[in-house]
Length: 306
Ligand SMILES: NC(=O)c1ccc[n+]([C@@H]2O[C@H](COP(=O)([O-])OP(=O)(O)OC[C@H]3O[C@@H](n4cnc5c(N)ncnc54)[C@H](OP(=O)(O)O)[C@@H]3O)[C@@H](O)[C@H]2O)c1
Image (cartoon, rainbow, N blue to C red; front, side):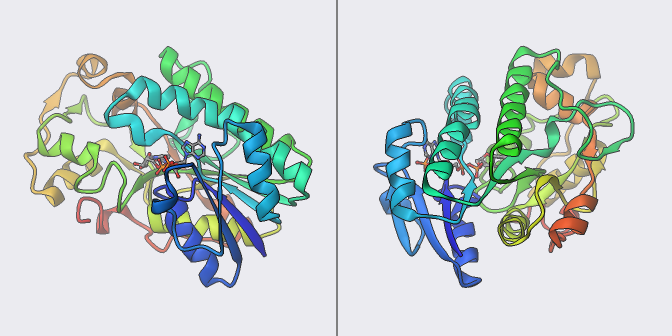
C-alpha cells in the first residue's frame, strides 16, 4: 500500500516508516522544512507544516497515499517550554487533524490512523478501564481539561470523517527517545530524587514500549477494523510498584514518600494525578480486532534499562 506517515521524525513516526517498508509498503515521510536531514529512509519525503492547510494539501497530493498515519505532536518541547508544548500539541490535534482529513479527502486516501493517549480517561469505576470510559474533559485542572478536550476533538474528527478512521490510544511510552529512557525527563527526575511517591502510590499506569506503539500502528494500517483502541501492555501497575522498580533499574535513590495532599504542589497536577488516582487501560479490543498483541507484555523487563 502507499502510506504517508505524518510526524516521521518522531519517537514513534521515525521507526514506523522503516517498519512499514519492511512489510513491503511504499512509504512517504511528511516532515517540516528544516527537518529533512532528520527524515528516516523512505520511498519519498514530502515537506509541509501540518498547520498550513494549503502546504499540507500539496504535500499529501504529491504522496497520493491510500493510508495516512498521524503521529504528530509538539511534546518534544516539554523540557524547555511546557506551555508551548501543550498549546502546540492541542493545535496539532485539532487544526492539524482537520487539515490532514481535508487533504485525505481531497486526494482520495481511504484510511486514517491517528495517535491518541490512553491516560485521558476519567478515573472512575474499575481500576483498569476499557475504551468506552468517558474522557476526563472536566478534569479539575484547566490545563489537563484543555489537553483532554483537544484529544476528544481529534478522536471525534477521525471517527466522524468520511474515511476508515482508527484512533490508537497509546499508553505511557517508554523505550528509546521517550521521557522514560535513561536520558529522558522522567528518568532524570527520578535520578535527581525529584519524583517522590505520593500517598500510597495508588494511581495505575499502563505502559507501552515504543516498539509496540510501532507494531500496533502497522497492525492498524493493515487491518480493516475501525474505531478506538487502547494500545497498552498487559501489566497495568500502581505507582507503588513501578516507581521504586524504575528507580532501582536506574540505580537512582529510592523515591521518598510524601503526603498525597502535597503532590500537586510538588509535582504539578498531572503527575500527582498519575501517581495517586489515574486508572489503567485494557488492551483486549486491540488484541481482538487489530490482531495485535504487545511483544513487550510487561514494563518490568526493560523500564529504566534502556
Ligand atoms: N503515550 C505517551 O506516553 C505519549 C504520547 C505522545 C507523546 N509522548 C512523549 O512525547 C514525546 C514525543 O513523542 P511523539 O512521538 O508523540 O512525538 P515526537 O517525537 O515529538 O514527534 C512528533 C512529530 O510531529 C512532528 N511535528 C510537530 N509539529 C509539526 C507540524 N506543525 N507539522 C508537521 N509535523 C509536526 C515532529 O516533527 P519535527 O521533528 O519537525 O518537530 C515529529 O515528527 C516522547 O518523549 C513521548 O514519550 C508520550
